[in-house]
Picture 1 (cartoon, rainbow, N blue to C red):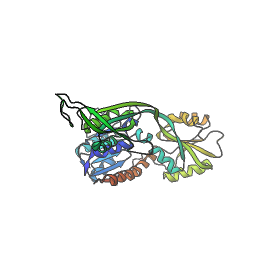
Picture 2 (picture 1 turned 120 degrees about the vertical axis):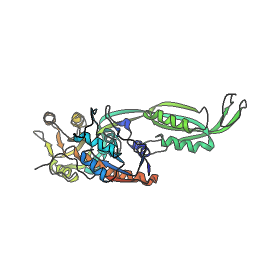
Picture 3 (picture 1 turned 90 degrees about the horizontal axis):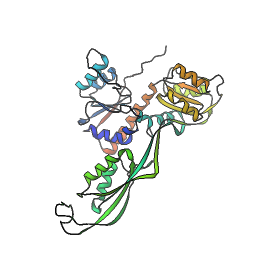
Picture 4 (picture 1 turned 45 degrees about the horizontal axis):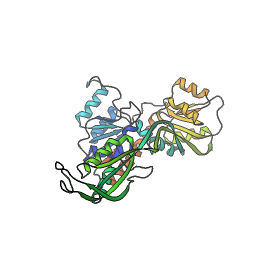
Length: 372
């Protein structure tokens, strides 16, 4: 058994809230993370039927793709199914945590998994959402406590560089200081010059977590007045975006690709937007899970043959058609792919951290559409 916050700290190291688009209500929606958790459910939506399933399975925390409270709640009445759903969550002490567009934007996230499932070799994102500067922290600490500080900095999110984690650099030198009468030194005595063999530890991290990294370092540092430097790096900028664009290994007819989509996502039907003179063979594909019709112009700029996204409206379909872009609308519910993929990741973290937690996929279908 672990604290809910312990699990979410690990989740946010992978899927940080700051990557969500502006105004997206990600994070904790219901309940508290300051409690022990034994059973965690992964779901696409929080619907009354999903809450019933969670109650039956004694779930402590639901991690969900779509935020259940997207607009302010004016009242809570048991006569309204939506409001009763929230009341049931509170009554049974089931916390709900949502990751929405940040799940779409992260590397090795939902849009990457779509590409992997469809055999698309993604080479860029569809639409840039974030441009994040990197910072460097250099902190001086007694050599015998350097490993502890490196561990604390890594746990705070520092040292993530591409496919590597816990990166740092250390240099050994001599620190000198004279504690004054009102000081309370961890090493040395008031009025006496002190020399200490120190390690200079350097780590980099996104500017978005500066306060968290610095606060963690100060709390763990043995000195009353930690010495540290903080820089903004001009040579390292991280770019993030929603959706993906990539290539199929070889050109194929659009109908063959449509058949692949239906098979991969277990669809009975989908909607296709064909220009008056569609290409006979397609290869460059743009994709954005959810409702991504507003990014169709980005698909055009990326010279995509096909744009896959859900909830395309009548007039946007006309615009795509007029611009010669093949559109494929497989619906919004294909995002349910996040459930098995995150269960896999949760169990990987469980093994790494030696957690005593059970991770359970929601089995209730929340797709509101049927095809007759």
